[in-house]
Image (tube, rainbow, N blue to C red):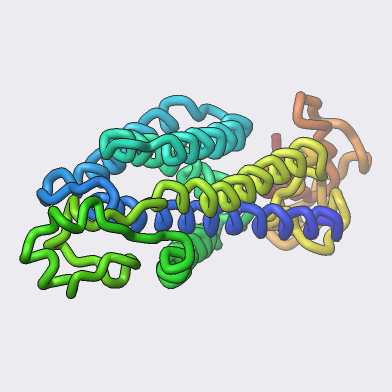
Length: 321
């Protein structure tokens, strides 16, 4: 692998884990805002109605994973699947911005589930080929760790954004129940002071606006990262982490994957080591020619077939076919 290929590989890894970070952040933002908006903005009091958005999210994410598995048949399909996921995230923001009812919020979470199923699964499929075969576990761990670290970090950030961007007011203070007035101490000004006894009476708006504005920044960032990754894969140098580092192309180092498609022959004294007489042939004589390259036979040979996955050795005694 050349230095340019190494830099290209590192850049692709950074882009993929950054997308995972953005995915974790948008998922946490929508989830927390939906939980708070269910009672404070949309007056949902039953556990079933408040948790319905999680059901929709889970079902559609599972469907997205199945759809992606059916659709992806080549590496090029993966990056386009990720791009489709980020485009769907724009629809989530649109639904959040226009949400006037709880049903719209549930629909937005269903679309988010499909988006996460496409985009997050694609990050897994994109990062694995960037690591060597014995480092695939590290690739998966790095991707998941980055995504869920950003998901966890988004929780305190959301709490601060809620204090800044969400305000509460009475729907009609004269109509507030005694239980609500007692529990809230007749105060309805901020989300921190909201109590469940005031469902439908103390209304905290702008949760959907918070998702639309803050989520817009995250989604645009994620979409930009995805486009940058696609451009790098289309126009950058090909990256194969299994290529030997520092070995010239065509080197006969066993265990390296060169992807040259040629046969290489190394000289040895197999016949003499075996205690058998050698039958010499002219050095460099041809013994066969195929699509993979030209085989050359020397006295007491080791015929090495170089493939994309490594070097295969075929030991043959001198003079034997």
